[in-house]
Image (cartoon, rainbow, N blue to C red; front, top):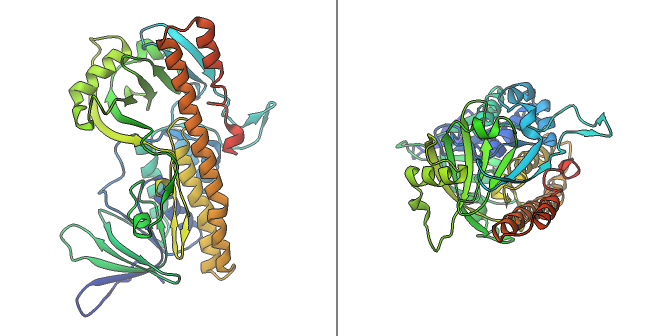
Length: 412
């Protein structure tokens, strides 16, 4: 089968045929396409966006994910769009960027144990908008991979032997695609997961936040103390994240939905909040975009249903503290890709595919739980400080976050 030879039925509806349909073109879906392409598997990826995401979103590339990028031959390209290593060594807790520092924790995330390197791949900090184009280019370099941005999944039917889906692309006549398998990488609101009536287990609506992507010169308060994250406290709680070596930043603003709604966060309101978090009312800020989201810590009750598989945010939603969301997603793809290839080639039976859920669901649950634990530990630091806790109590709260930033064992 090939993903590029359509046929036309009597109603003039275009029908495509392929081995694997991938729904979603974020890091999980693009990695799945690249990994399947590496095995020579015919696949079609559809993504409703016209281009890769321009919002930074995920930043952390842990060691295991770097190893996967190394297998794909793109680690050097990824490394070239990452921050220098000194930005990967600490987290800083502070009242505001200009105000008193509450404490710091050291990050022990690089693959070095007892002075010995345990992996040739490093832990890195970049941004999703820089990473996605590199993975996409690698996926499109394989002749068996057909990447179609600007194409949306309208419906999907799955049984034990086949997948049939309807695709729309602008004003064109809807087309159908027949595949042996479908891989849902279509995000937290996954149409594929909902079509299969697969529930999510775990707490939802843990917090309401907005991601703010902005340009500002924060060098006077950060260049002398580079850090992966800068956490600030009330009345303008925030977390600052440097995106690149220019003046591009990402921050996450938590808000009370009883007081504000997502639509309240205009660029002007977001800029005012950011200035309060910095502690300088005059700093120049250019807000590029504002995206509301809700924190959850959930895992799908099953990651396989007949010929359908869930990966990435379609399979699990992790709190961001620890940066395991994108990493868990890409590692889902890595676990599943070779198994699909082996079954399609007749080298293994269908039961091999059951091991995808068996292996990945416990890891997703563990990563979600630890990420939520990280979030709560940061919350304790803030509450201690905001309640006027004495310095020893605040220092103890900072020390209690030691696992947050020391996750090499969890990573590997």
